[in-house]
Image (cartoon, rainbow, N blue to C red; front, side):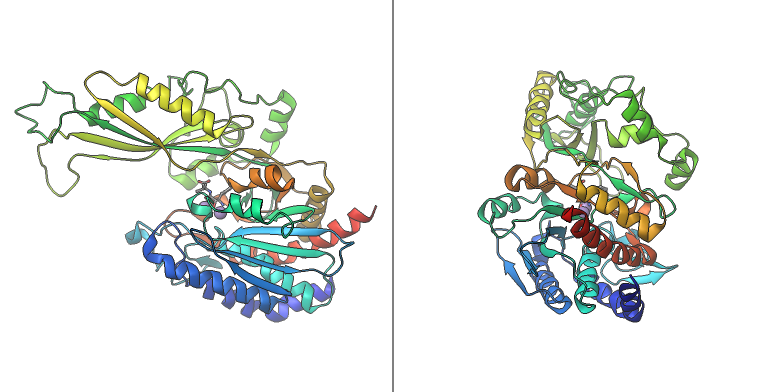
Length: 457
Ligand code: BES
Ligand code: MN
Ligand code: MN
């Protein structure tokens, strides 16, 4: 639409400046020292919604970080879209690996560098700016509600209750989320599923105190050695996970669906080059696309114990710890897998150590329909903005709240993400391409327009 293109091109610099302003707020949800900044960020999101033309916007406190809710209702007979996103970000560590400050955004080679540039401030803010484009050109085609949370990166533990408590307020026809990625701008894609998550922490305790590794070494079990052995035993030689029952409920995709998934343009050599690895590694019998899209995994996210300071200290440590996550696929259940892990991990512990297993937050896997009006509206929006039909793919990451939208509100979701796999989300030097930011703002209004038009029939 000409009016949208004109408005966007007249306001490009401001749209970019406003995003940079938001990226300057260190809204790290995991670290309580940023609590005031997280709150300040919620205020900024609220203000941006009002400035973009929302009728109302409010800060909804939770026992954790606040949720920002806003809406623009034009006609109850038109469809209502609930936009979900998150304004919180991951911790920026390790700081020394950033080329510029994580909260001092810079634009270099047409890329915005900052923590949250892609995940999810950049992507969430596209919806705020798209609202502005539609409102200011008097072309808003449907009702829009915004629910932007501040706890996604720490498991959305208070959002489930917010959904329960606000069913009427959140009444909508579809949830729209931009917090995932595309294959590339040349090969636009739409994610049709996300993996679930079970996240565990383990502690292995040996002797009741740290010991001299010469005086006692060889005679007392070293908890770090034991933990490494236990972790190593969680995969077999084919990289299958050895926890009994782990694969019982895994939804094996049909050959046709697997074929379609593998048809997506994917260059394994580019992939390896980008990551600086000679070979990829994963479960035998599956391609890289399948390993990240439709297969469950188990990974150590952190491991510690003993002496890690400067120089060499000879010590046989008393304990060792690790954080272990499992990505889940339909129809695995986060609670069931957590329980299986716990039982198995305790059962493989030798008598000379004791183990403690605790579960952190988790989430259920989701699959989104591809035959719905909303999916078709998104696909057509991409076709208009990119000139190409989107390729359906499966996302490897997790957004735990998506499963609850369906369970609590009865709502399906469209994952209209514009990130790229190499955006370094959760890593140093996170970036979001300026092109993707504006392409998103251009695409989103078409989604609303298509949805309104297609819903009439
Ligand atoms: N936006 C990501 C999830 C994502 C990234 C999905 C890329 C698909 C493609 C989200 O913010 C995230 O990081 N989720 C966490 C889970 C959460 C419970 C901390 C994840 O996937 O590790
Ligand atoms: Mn995210
Ligand atoms: Mn994230």
